[in-house]
Length: 81
Image 1 (cartoon, one colour):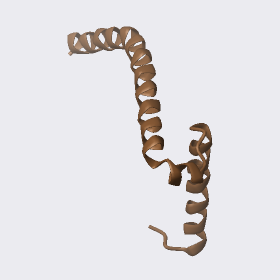
Image 2 (cartoon, rainbow, N blue to C red):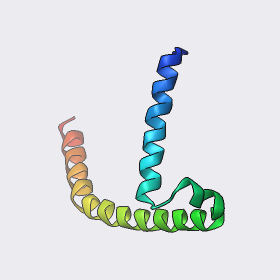
Image 3 (cartoon, helix red, strand yellow):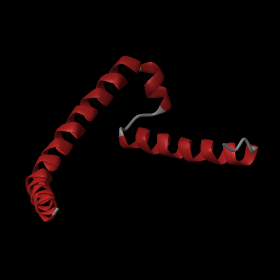
C-alpha cells in the first residue's frame, strides 16, 4: 500500500465526497447528525429497509430468467462430458 501523503489526501477527498453525497441524498446535514443522532439512525435504517426490499424484488425477477438459463447451460455442459 502506498503511504504517500498526496495519495492519502486524494483518498480522503474522494471518501469525503462520497459521504457528502450520501448525506445529501438522505437529506441530512452534519448538524442534523449531531442533534438528532437517534432519529438519523432510524431514518437510515428505514431507508436501508426500503432499499433492500426494492433490490430483492429485482433480484427475484432477474433470477427467474438467469437461474433457468444457468441450469440449462450447466446440464448441457455435463451431458457433453
